[in-house]
Image (cartoon, rainbow, N blue to C red; front, side, top):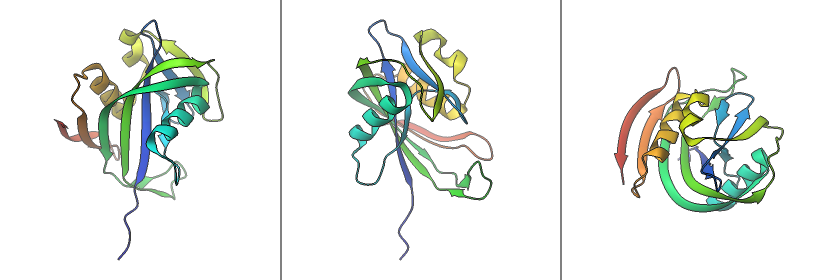
Length: 160
């Protein structure tokens, strides 16, 4: 039996004391909220704290799981050769508790953005969908299945 291969990733929607949202600009994805892949042997919360700190310089407190997302598309990486497997993402609401804004090897810019202007910067449909779930969070976790290739298509949306 072949074991399934999935990427597990986490995302953090981080607010500061003024209610602004942390966004980072990536080389491939434009403006997004910080996050990334969970490394082998790493737990979800440690992965999220590490990714936010690496991409933005910000230290966080993790408050709520707000969404679980499945990207069920298998597609080619930016190199056009490597298969990218299906992905499971978990997004959390977070609070800024320290650090200083700074870029990294993965980010070219980072900033605090007024909550009402975030969707003016996030252009990727998957990230927009996930941020909208954050805006609509009512204590019930959102579950959305989508594909991103060949084009974005939302296949399922429910609350659990």
